[in-house]
Structure formats: C-alpha cells, structure tokens
Picture (cartoon, rainbow over the protein chains, first blue to last red):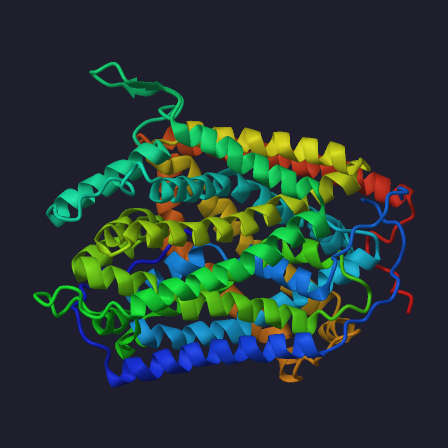
Length: 59
Length: 547
C-alpha cells in the first residue's frame, strides 16, 4: 500500500494537452459508466429472499 | 456446530458497500494520483486498466465465489475456506496468511486512521488555525512547519516519544501526546462496531459512510476544479496545469517495466483482493446470492473513488497552490502527499480549514470502513477455531489488536515498524494469498467448476473469455508482478533487516511480532482443524454442495 515505485524524473508544469483531455475523459468516463451500469442493474434487479442454511460454526 | 444464530448481511447493497468500503482507503486518494503522475501520467491508465481486467476483476470474482462456497460449508475464515478449495492442509495453512494480513495491517492502519481524525479535529477546531501553517510565509518555512507537525503526531523522532513528550522551557508539555487519546477513541469505535456484528455494525457504518464520502468528495472536487489560477503572477499554477501534470500522457513510460509493475500493484492493492476480507465477507452470503455483479460493482465503486475523485482532486489542488516542485516531493509516497503537502494547499485555499477538515474526514471515513473489515476476518477465525461466542472473540481480537497497535505506537522512530509490517504483511503476503486463491480456483477446484459455482444465482454471467484469463493469464500476470516486485523492493528491505543500521533493531523486533502473530494463527488453525474434523465438516472440500 505505502510501498511505492519511484521514477524520479523531473517534471515541468504543462497545461492539459489534447492527449491529456482524451485520457482523462476516457478514464473517468469508463469508471463512471461502469459504476452507473452496475448500480442500475443492482437496484433494478429483484433481490432473492430465500432461507439459508441454519447454524454454522460461528455466530 | 454451535447453536448460535448464523450472521448474514442485511441486504445485497450492504455487502457491496461493505466490500467497497474495505477497498476504498487512503490509497485511492493519495497513492493513485502520485503513482500515476510518476509513472507516465495519462499513459499510466493503459496498463492500469489492463491490470484491472486481467488481474483485479478475475481474482476478485474468484475470491467472492470461494467465500460464498466456503460459507455454505459452514466456514468463514480464509484458512478453512482455502483448505476447502485446495482440498487439503497446504491451502489451509497458507490461508493463515489471509488472517495475518488484515490483522497485521490493522496493527498500523488504526494509527493512520487516528492521524486522519486528529487532522480533522485540528482543522475544525475554531481555536486553532488548521495545523498552524502561515500561508504568507515562504514555502520553505511552510514545508518545515508541516513536516514538524507530522513528525510530532506520528512520533517519528524517537521510539516511545508519544508516551513521554519533552517538557518545554516554559514548563508546559510533557506526558502523553494527545494523539494517544485520539487513538483510544478510534480503537474503541472500531471495537464497538465490530462487536455489533455484520449487519448492525459494519454494514450500517458502510451504508452511512460511503455516500457521505462520495458527497464530500464531489463538493471538494467542484471546489478544486473551479479554482482557476488563484495567483495571476504564477500562470503555471492553474487547474489546467494541475490536470496536465497528472493526465498528460508520456507514452515513452510504457516502454518501462516499472510503469506496468506500478499499475498492476496499484490495481491489486487498491481492490483488496488477496487481503482476506472479501473471502470472509462473502462467506456470509446466501447460497444463491449473486457474486458476479456484486463483485463487479464493488470493484467499480472502488475505481470511481480512485480515478474520478482521487485522480482529479489531490494532485490538481497541490499544483495550483504549491507548484510542481513541492508536489513532486509529495507524490513519492502516500503519507507525504496527504499529511505533508496537502496541509500547505489547504492553508492557502480560501475556506481552507473547512476543506481541509472535510478532506481529512473523507480519509478518516475511508480508513474506518477499511479498518473495520480488518478485524472481522480474525474475529470469525477465532470463533470457528475455538468455538467461542461473539463476546469472547471480540475480547480476544481486541486484545490482539491492541498489542500490535501499542507495538507500532511505541516503535515509532522513522515509522520503521509501520513500514516493515506494511511491506511484508500488507504488500508481499497479499501477492502470496492472491496466488494461492487463483491457483486453487483455476487449477485445483477447476476453472469451469469454479465459474459454474460463481454463476449460481448470478445476475450476470462471467464472459467466457475469463475462463482462459482466470486459468492462465491471471496466474502468469501475477507471477510476473511478484518477480518484478521482489526484484525492485525486497533487497532494500532485506538490507535493512540484516544490516547494522539504526533501523535494523526495530525491523527485527517487528519481524518477531509478525512471526508471533503468525504462530498464534497457525496454532489456532491446528486447534480448529481438530474441531472441524470432529464435527464431521468437509474441511478438505471433497463433497459437492447439495442443491
């Protein structure tokens, strides 16, 4: 988690390029689209409510 | 078997939010943007999404399926469930790592959670000005203040310093640092919610915390994206420059193996696969509860927090207020960006105390939904290996957790204890457990049988190509990640451990703690194994489930 890989190349400030816009919109669009699709299916799909196995080793 | 009522999730949304809450942590907001910025910017997203498709989602599906199947056999802990899936004792004992990981990470994670709450209190306290940074001072002075504050709060200066603060010349100070009392509050919250059980404790917290985090995240995001160029004299410190720093693709980075390794590592550790939590959480599901769509939804939720919020807020705000040079110092590590660089950003932002408090509140909520998930697997393991009830298991896991917490609190110098546990337990062993899981799923249990089990009650089908991915691609990809990870990181840690530097002693003591914890887990597995066999349970997974 905190152990990270480093590439210490020096960076300079550049405004968002066309390539940057494309990568940002595609990436954020992909994860937002996926999360909306998943929750829409979860919330519109009826949840099964059947009894399960009783007991178990723990509580 | 005991006559205790079986615990279950209150709803499908509840288990999804609980798994998502476990996965969404500090790494989403701090580690991801730093990692992306340092490893190719927008180009980083290509290996990142490939790793999500070939590693994160398939192993996640395997873990959800294994957990639910194990639950139907009467088991809720990684050792027992992996014994079932690998049809023998080897998987069971390796599964002990699936208890060590959440417990070991809990040893230090609660302390980071405590730092987050401490920062929240400082920012929302009307009698203090955040953490005391003067925004008009030169940036070098601000760096000194924020570093000194972090060093004091974490006790990084010396071992035991949090319990014995130096007395100031005016006679004030001394005694125990306030952060220790904050720690007690955080630990008590964790224990309280875990004791309340799955539905009333963990699920209830995650159902409240996840939407709050999303709303606060969006509020801060809107604020950051509307900052424009606060200082016209510094046109290179604008929102578009901040976004450019993170998202402009440096395609040449794709030719560097480290970029691919960093992307796979980010996906892997962010989704919490192989952590021992998903396998435990899904074991409380019913036989025909969906695991395919639920697993995908939990992964998607984590990705939304990571890419859409983490990818837009932290580094952008940092570039706008402190520029590239200071930001680059912070992106080298999760804690550096979060606890040292961002406080300087909030000091200069209009309404900075509010936004700083809100940001660290998000981190605190992200941390507590994760830390709760770290106690539950150990609690379940104690219950099923010793056959004890919820009260006794909570007492044991509380004591065990506190021993580890106090160890890390005391051995705070340079955060060596924290870092040692994080690297070996919270990083290296996760790769091992994930490897055991995907091999057990794809090769021992059988990938076709495994996917058939996943499809029981599923709301969507796993695409056929994933049978090939789960059997061949994921294990191979994981193997490459393990080798690359070891080559890049293990030598330094071994040098620290076996060297004669000032950190060696603390690293060795930390390893004693890890080995003692693993020894305790192994002993409990031996005891549990005898119990499970005596109960006539199918602990080697030879019998199919009854339909």
